[in-house]
Length: 139
Image (cartoon, rainbow, N blue to C red; front, side, top):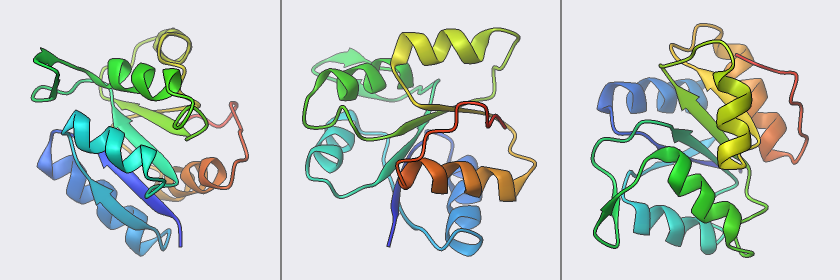
Protein backbone atom coordinates (compact mmCIF):
# COMPACT_ATOMS: atom_id res chain seq x y z
CA UNK A 1 0.00 0.00 0.00
CA UNK A 2 1.25 3.47 -0.87
CA UNK A 3 2.12 5.74 2.06
CA UNK A 4 1.90 9.52 1.77
CA UNK A 5 3.65 11.77 4.28
CA UNK A 6 1.78 15.04 4.68
CA UNK A 7 4.02 17.85 5.94
CA UNK A 8 1.46 20.48 6.90
CA UNK A 9 1.18 22.93 9.81
CA UNK A 10 -2.56 23.61 9.52
CA UNK A 11 -4.56 20.84 11.27
CA UNK A 12 -7.63 21.50 9.10
CA UNK A 13 -5.64 21.15 5.86
CA UNK A 14 -4.04 17.98 7.22
CA UNK A 15 -7.47 16.47 7.99
CA UNK A 16 -8.86 17.41 4.57
CA UNK A 17 -5.86 16.01 2.68
CA UNK A 18 -5.80 12.89 4.85
CA UNK A 19 -9.48 12.18 4.29
CA UNK A 20 -9.25 12.67 0.52
CA UNK A 21 -6.16 10.46 0.26
CA UNK A 22 -7.47 7.63 2.42
CA UNK A 23 -11.08 7.60 1.17
CA UNK A 24 -10.58 8.36 -2.52
CA UNK A 25 -7.04 7.11 -3.06
CA UNK A 26 -6.78 4.20 -0.64
CA UNK A 27 -3.45 5.58 0.62
CA UNK A 28 -1.96 5.15 4.05
CA UNK A 29 -1.24 8.61 5.48
CA UNK A 30 1.35 9.83 7.96
CA UNK A 31 1.74 13.41 9.10
CA UNK A 32 4.48 15.51 10.63
CA UNK A 33 5.84 19.01 10.53
CA UNK A 34 8.88 18.05 12.61
CA UNK A 35 11.83 18.30 10.23
CA UNK A 36 13.92 15.60 11.95
CA UNK A 37 10.97 13.20 11.85
CA UNK A 38 10.30 13.98 8.18
CA UNK A 39 13.95 13.24 7.35
CA UNK A 40 13.91 10.04 9.42
CA UNK A 41 10.72 8.78 7.76
CA UNK A 42 12.13 9.56 4.32
CA UNK A 43 15.49 7.90 5.05
CA UNK A 44 13.83 4.79 6.47
CA UNK A 45 11.80 4.36 3.27
CA UNK A 46 8.60 4.46 5.37
CA UNK A 47 6.87 6.73 2.82
CA UNK A 48 6.42 6.62 -0.94
CA UNK A 49 5.63 10.28 -1.64
CA UNK A 50 5.68 13.52 0.37
CA UNK A 51 3.04 16.24 0.19
CA UNK A 52 5.00 19.31 1.38
CA UNK A 53 3.39 22.57 2.48
CA UNK A 54 5.59 25.44 1.30
CA UNK A 55 4.84 27.73 4.26
CA UNK A 56 5.49 26.01 7.56
CA UNK A 57 5.22 28.25 10.60
CA UNK A 58 6.46 25.91 13.34
CA UNK A 59 9.11 23.72 11.71
CA UNK A 60 12.65 23.91 13.07
CA UNK A 61 15.77 21.87 12.48
CA UNK A 62 19.13 22.22 14.19
CA UNK A 63 17.94 25.42 15.87
CA UNK A 64 16.76 27.16 12.69
CA UNK A 65 13.30 27.73 11.22
CA UNK A 66 12.64 25.71 8.05
CA UNK A 67 9.96 26.05 5.41
CA UNK A 68 8.83 23.41 2.93
CA UNK A 69 11.25 24.56 0.24
CA UNK A 70 14.22 24.19 2.60
CA UNK A 71 13.07 20.76 3.82
CA UNK A 72 12.66 19.63 0.21
CA UNK A 73 16.17 20.88 -0.57
CA UNK A 74 17.52 18.79 2.34
CA UNK A 75 15.73 15.73 0.98
CA UNK A 76 16.99 16.28 -2.57
CA UNK A 77 20.61 16.83 -1.41
CA UNK A 78 20.68 13.50 0.48
CA UNK A 79 21.41 10.54 -1.85
CA UNK A 80 19.24 8.33 0.38
CA UNK A 81 16.14 10.49 -0.14
CA UNK A 82 16.85 12.31 -3.42
CA UNK A 83 14.61 9.97 -5.42
CA UNK A 84 11.62 10.29 -3.10
CA UNK A 85 8.91 12.27 -4.92
CA UNK A 86 7.91 15.56 -3.27
CA UNK A 87 4.80 17.51 -4.23
CA UNK A 88 4.74 21.11 -3.04
CA UNK A 89 1.43 22.49 -1.77
CA UNK A 90 0.80 26.20 -1.34
CA UNK A 91 -2.06 28.62 -0.84
CA UNK A 92 0.11 31.49 -2.06
CA UNK A 93 -0.05 30.59 -5.72
CA UNK A 94 0.64 33.37 -8.18
CA UNK A 95 1.65 33.41 -11.82
CA UNK A 96 5.14 31.98 -12.20
CA UNK A 97 5.25 30.50 -8.68
CA UNK A 98 4.93 26.91 -9.88
CA UNK A 99 8.05 27.03 -12.04
CA UNK A 100 10.17 29.02 -9.60
CA UNK A 101 9.22 26.92 -6.55
CA UNK A 102 9.84 23.67 -8.41
CA UNK A 103 13.23 24.91 -9.64
CA UNK A 104 14.28 26.25 -6.23
CA UNK A 105 13.22 23.18 -4.26
CA UNK A 106 13.90 20.31 -6.65
CA UNK A 107 10.38 18.97 -6.04
CA UNK A 108 8.62 16.91 -8.70
CA UNK A 109 5.11 18.31 -8.35
CA UNK A 110 3.07 21.34 -7.37
CA UNK A 111 -0.50 21.76 -6.14
CA UNK A 112 -2.22 25.05 -5.33
CA UNK A 113 -4.60 25.22 -2.38
CA UNK A 114 -7.47 24.97 -1.99
CA UNK A 115 -7.76 21.57 -3.60
CA UNK A 116 -11.05 21.64 -5.49
CA UNK A 117 -10.70 18.69 -7.86
CA UNK A 118 -10.20 15.80 -5.44
CA UNK A 119 -9.87 13.18 -8.17
CA UNK A 120 -7.08 15.10 -9.95
CA UNK A 121 -5.38 15.57 -6.56
CA UNK A 122 -5.44 11.81 -5.93
CA UNK A 123 -4.32 11.05 -9.50
CA UNK A 124 -1.30 13.34 -9.24
CA UNK A 125 -0.19 11.67 -6.04
CA UNK A 126 -0.78 8.21 -7.53
CA UNK A 127 1.33 9.15 -10.54
CA UNK A 128 4.17 10.42 -8.34
CA UNK A 129 4.03 7.44 -6.00
CA UNK A 130 4.19 5.12 -8.99
CA UNK A 131 7.27 6.91 -10.27
CA UNK A 132 5.42 8.38 -13.22
CA UNK A 133 6.30 12.02 -13.53
CA UNK A 134 3.72 14.15 -15.27
CA UNK A 135 4.85 17.77 -15.01
CA UNK A 136 1.94 18.96 -17.14
CA UNK A 137 -0.56 17.85 -14.50
CA UNK A 138 -1.20 20.91 -12.40
CA UNK A 139 -3.95 21.37 -9.86
